[in-house]
Image (cartoon, rainbow, N blue to C red; front, side, top):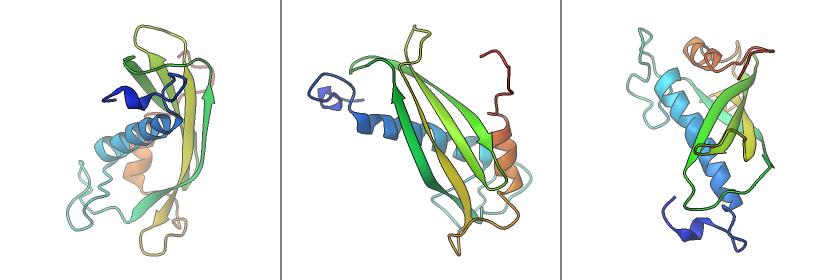
Length: 147
C-alpha cells in the first residue's frame, strides 16, 4: 500500500484493498506453485516435467470477507493462504489478514474458483489439471490440524 488514500474516510483500510490482497496471494500461488501462466498461452507454463500450456483458467464464482478488527495504512500486514475445499474442478481459498506481530486475524475472506476450459469457458471436463491440483493440495489444511 503506497499512500494514505488506501484508507477510507474512517481511517480503515479500504474494503477494495482486501479483494486486491486476496487476488494477489491466490494468483501468486497459482503461478509459482501450480504452473499457471495467465499471460502467455504459447510457452511452457509448468515448472515441472509437464511442459504444456494450461488449457484452463480459474473463474471466480463466489467471494466473501468477514471483518473482526480494523487495520489501516501504514500497518504492515501478513497474509495466510489455505485451501478450505478442493473439489474436482473447483477450489475455495481462505485468506487470513494479520497485523504483523499479532496472532488474531483481523479479516478472513476468500473466494471460489471453478477451473474452466479456455476455449469454452465452461467447467473443465475431468476436473482441474493435475499440476494445479498438486499445487493446491499443498494448501489443504486437514480437519483437526493445529494451525
